[in-house]
Image (cartoon, rainbow, N blue to C red):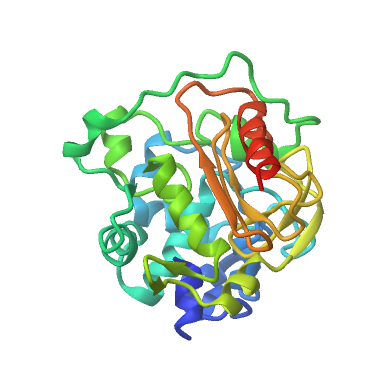
Length: 298
């Protein structure tokens, strides 16, 4: 959704976030760019000091707290995965430019016109269709635990809580409660793997797809226990190769095993979702087997 704003000339990746969201300039963040936020370099992976987990259900309050927060490392010097704060940062940048919430714009601009079963903020009528997640049998291995990792994943307030599942499904949390079917995700990623075309319409131009996927930073992530390569809003396949052999493949993986990817070199795209979560942070063996089988059939 942010890439579409860039494609339309309404936003630039190298633009300071504070130009569209002035409050974000607090605590020395005035020079942080949109692409640094989108590549997890902003140093805002979570809150160090305790907050009420229900804070995440208040969009304006969460964004205000992030705007006032000092980065946990020098922005632009390293990546550190922002598992929940990312959705508010990207979503507020989008809202400040577009005027709509990201969930509303997703429905109006992509999901409804192209019949994609894809939601950020799920209406009550859709709740009975949802599979309940089964928690993984073990906790993920985060390696050596540091302050950014604790803030991002391990504190009691690191994720939304205290309001019940129904309210969590209704909330618009672009980083944490997207609801989708695998075919919907695969069709969307398929467009990104084939020049931006979806059902005969271009949803993102080829140059912008390449610019979105271009590497912004690579190196040891400060939150995840991996060497990561990040584009502007997407994980890149190298060096871990969780989505097959493609050097230019990009996408995203989620805790528990879900993933979606696009390979512009072959035109192959895919998605895997499940309700039985595993403890894998990246490269769930179930998805890997399916992806490897797909490549073997080319």
